[in-house]
Image 1 (cartoon, rainbow, N blue to C red):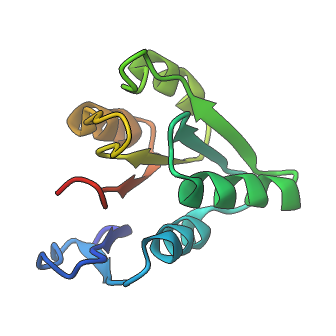
Image 2: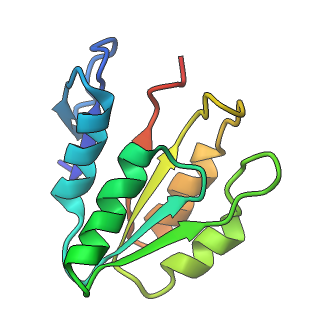
Amino acid sequence: MSNAIYLDAQGTERPRPEAVAMVHKCLTEANNMAINSVIRAGMKFVASAIEHKSVLEPGMRAASICSDIDFETCRVDDQGIIDLEDLRRRLEGANSVVSVMYANNEVGTIQPMDEIASICRAHGAVLHVDAAQAR
């Protein structure tokens, strides 16, 4: 079994067998729980510049508490799409956690998750996806 974490706050899907399932009613708490459960000293936390504060705040808090955790935001273009080359650069040589909001409810952006997941996999990064607004 992989070390993937599957969160379905609405309880609408069956958990994939290769993932650890967590169902939670509060999306902010679910994001906090997922991020706080994987980020450790010596890691870099990378989030897109347009993430929800429930993702940004635990990353910033972890970096402020532990000087051995780096917090970085990845650039996005004028449509809110993650700059994939910037993401690649930020993951080089780092033990990383990446958090991405799949669908942004404010600007309507849908992130290219296949490419983002491939980049994370190639760099051994843990990927957290907030898909709460994807329905």
